[in-house]
Figure 1 (cartoon, one colour):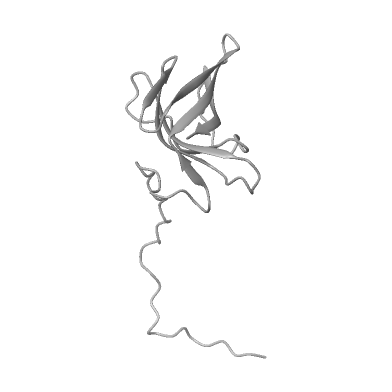
Figure 2: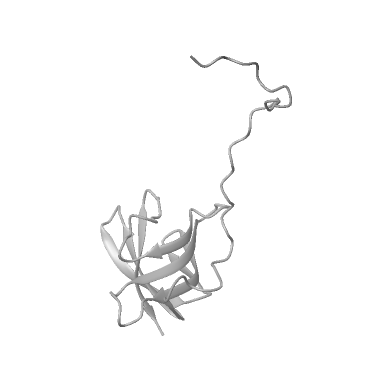
Length: 134
């Protein structure tokens, strides 16, 4: 039967609890390079849906522009497509703010093939990435 020994006197447990790690703050700029082998593009096409009227409309612009849809301001910071030898997909880095809001409602990459991964949570509008243009 093992014997119980006193704890090592050199060991002292921490006096204060260790704080959990904080998540990294959201980047205000997209990564300078798109991940993997995605190819950057200069034009973007989004699809806006007004949930109240059930009408959708295309939203077309260029990277660096602020596009408007209803009360939303959509700053397009990047757009990229997959190479032709891979399955087609489109991604856009967007910052979406509502009128009068000081912080963005959404900031990050939206991917066309998986819209539920990064979505805009808004009671009236829905925004999705449709295409990127050269």
